[in-house]
Amino acid sequence: MQREPSFNSQLATLPVYVPGRPIEEVAREHGLDPATVIKVASNENPLGPSPQAVAAMQRMLASVHLYPDGSAFHLKERLAARFGLVPGNILLGNGSNEVLEMIGHAFLGPGTEVVVSQHCFAVYPIVTALFGAKLVTVPAWPDFGADIEGMLAAITPATRVLFLANPNNPTGNLVSREDISRLLAGVPAHVLLVLDEAYLEFLDDPVDCLPLLRSEVMPNLMLVRTFSKVYGLAGLRLGYGMAVPRVISGLEKTRQPFNINSVAQAGALAALEDSAHLEKTRQNNRDGLAFFHAAFHGMDLSYVKSYANFVLVRVGDGAGVFAYLQKHGVIARPMGSYGLGEWLRISVGTPAENQRCLELLKQAIAAVR
Image (cartoon, rainbow, N blue to C red; front, side, top):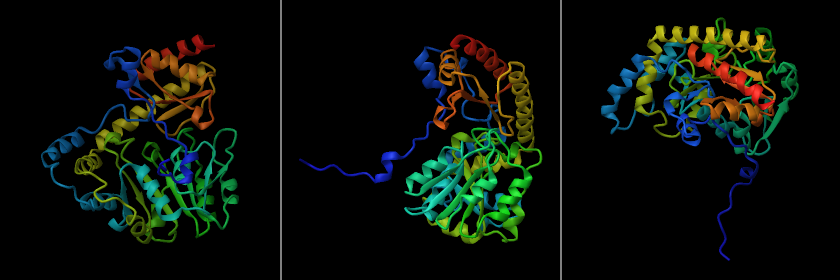
C-alpha cells in the first residue's frame, strides 16, 4: 500500500478561522437579491474606502504587470513620518494577520508559550498552534475584560509572546490606561508584548505607546495596526507592525517577497491623506455605537459597551438568531467559536443598515424563543 504524505502533527488540532460569510454566498443560498443583503459581520467600514484611495488605486492598475516595490519604500516613509518613527520601525504585512504569523515564525516553536486573555482574537490561538507552541489562556473578568495581573502572573521562562488586543475583538472591551501601564511595566524582557491596535483609530483618547518605540526603552514591545477597519481597505489586505529596528529586521527575514501589492500601496498612501473621510467614518461609528447601546438597553439585552466598531450582544439562541437574520438578508457574526453561543457580534453599519438590522433582530429573537 502506497504511503501518503504526513502532515505536521499540530495540524490535527489547529483551530480554523471562520470569517464572516460573503454577501454573494448568502444571497445564492437563500435566493436573495445581493443588492438587498447587508453585512454587519466583519467589522468593515460601511462607508467604503476613501474616494482618494479609489482614484489612486485605479491609476495604479495600468502598472500591475510590473512587480511592486518589494520594500514599499514610500509607504514605510509615510507611516514613519506620521508616527515620528524611522522606516526601520515599520513592518508591512498582507493584512495584520500576516504580521501576527511572522511573529510566530520568528519567536514560536515547540517548548515555547503564548499568553492570551480568554475571548481573544481567534488568530492568536491559530498562530500559536501553527508553530507548535503552548497557548496559556487567562480567564477574563465577568465583563469580558482582560485580567492584566493574571496575564502577567501566567508568564513563565518559556513564554515568548503575550498578545493583547485593545480594544478587544470580539468583545469590544477597552483595557484601562492604568492596566496598560501595569502591563508595560510588568512584562519581562524575554517576552514580546504584542499590542494589537486594529481598532485604535476609533478611540477619542487612545493610550500612546509610540514614545516607547521612539526612545527604544522597551525593545520587547510591538504595536500592530491595520488598514482594514477605519480606512475601509479590508479587501486589499494590508496591515503593519511597529517595533524597534532590531526586532523589525529579524521579522523581515520571515516576510514573503512582494507581500504588499502595488495597488494596496497606492491605496494606503492616498487613504492616509484623506483626513475628512477618516473623521466621517469615526463620526458614523460614534453614532452607530450610541444607537445600538441605547437600543439594546431598551430591549433589556445584555451587551458589552464597545470601544471598537461593533457591539457584542446576548440574544439567547445565538445560532438560531444568526440563521434567522441571514435568511432575511442580514449577515451578523455568531460567537459559538469563541465559546459565546448566546451572543452575536454586530458591526456598525450606515444609519439605514443599523435600523434594518435592529428591526430584524427584534423579529429574530421573538421567532426563535
